[in-house]
Figure 1 (cartoon, rainbow, N blue to C red):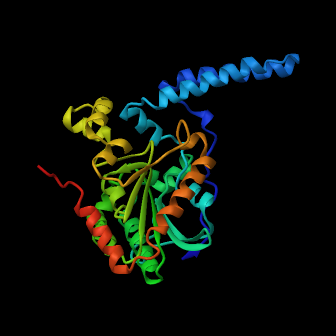
Figure 2: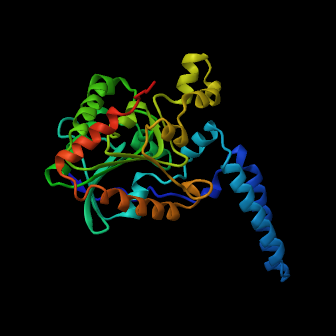
Figure 3: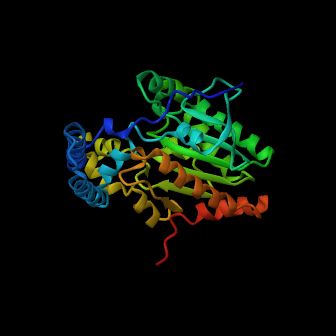
Length: 331
């Protein structure tokens, strides 16, 4: 099946939603807006006052976003206005054609996959897609794939390997779908097969965690030569709520679990789980999706250049060494 992807799911202005820790920022933004309206209505020049408040706003943002707790970072990673896979595909590529179906059971709308042109060169794109409103989120199952989603992803990866096309995956899922049907159709087996097969792909695989990186649901498309993570994204073996429910029998202990899990981009870099952190615009990607798209474009150009002169065997070997080195302890 080949058809154009759904294009209605686009990022919305971030001003619609805020968090408790962002209240001081919202208050300053409201004051600036009020002064601008008053200046226009009364014809009074208030440029200096507005500029002063804008400087305070910038300082306040830098202070708040440089000292976020792990739980606050998770809130940003889950922000409903954060750019999703289809947003990045639209910003970064041209001529995207979505490919559908696993050729065994069905198409899974929680994972989008297809071919596009990036900087004039062919790439294969695969990623989780959550959806923007209730209808779209139901259609996408909040970005939680069924087994056929992982099998579709692997079919597309094998197609990329056949035509020597680099693969870029975007991770953004709370986890694999936990439904009875998913288990009956082999959820764990589908993810396990992907882990094995991705490790052997003879083309470069660039993995980018753009939001939530939930357990095996993320790993199913997460075995790459390079694993990168956005500044406010997270990657974890379990959600903080799930961890809190197991350890303390209370999901309200999620902030405590988030601290213990070491799941932030900064923690993951220290632990050698990810290769690098991609900076986001101040306040998160949802505050300036266009700027985030430019940052990601520049980074992807650099990452793909790494593999231009590598043979297929070298590409496989570099991926193997990367994952073998994770968790190595030297005493």
